[in-house]
Structures are given as C-alpha cells and as structure tokens.
Image 1 (tube, rainbow, N blue to C red):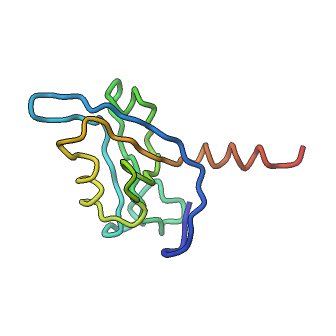
Image 2 (cartoon, rainbow, N blue to C red; image 1 turned 45 degrees about the vertical axis):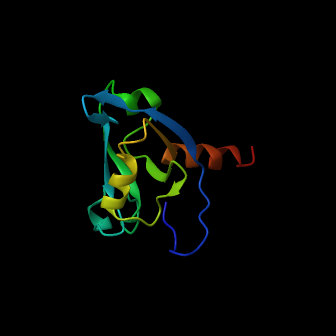
Length: 125
C-alpha cells in the first residue's frame, strides 16, 4: 500500500490491543518494527512498491503479548494510542510504542489480507 505524502489515505484497518508484559522494570510487547521516514524503503521487505516509508511489524515473538493479541508479521502500524504513525521516524515510532507509563498499547494496523478481502467482497459475482 503506497500513498502520496500530504494526501488522504484510505485503508482497511484492524484494532489490536496489546497488554504489555511486565518483567522487572521492563514492559515487553513481543514484537519488532522496521521502517520510518528516515529509513530506506527499498530495504523494507513488506513495502510492495519499495517506496512506502511506513512502520511495519518485522517480527512477532511466538506466545508473546503481540502474538496473543493477533498482531502479525508484515502488519503496517497506522496509529499507536491515537497517534498517527504514517509519517514518523523509526525512533519516534519506537518511543511511542515503549512508553513506560502505558501498560496497554492500542494499535490500528492494516495488512494485505484485509485489503484483499474487502476488494474481493466488492467484486460483482
């Protein structure tokens, strides 16, 4: 899914709520991210046209909080706790996700299978 900066984005999204796992002073989400406006989109395996600088899920720990919540590798993160994530640096995204005073992370994500399902449902039969 690509878009032109500054233009409205239409996307099919799914809400995912992740309860962070407390491990001493650390709060664990159980996933890793890649991408950001400061990163090379050609290196992002989930950017279909190699121009998308969005934030993508690059790893989900099996059985971890993100896995239990339904997050999937390849998901594009559109929002974190109401904050727009479509035009952020990698570091800004990481900081939004790992705030120490938040035990829950509410995400809006989109994934190719969601887009395809909606597209398919709209086709004449």
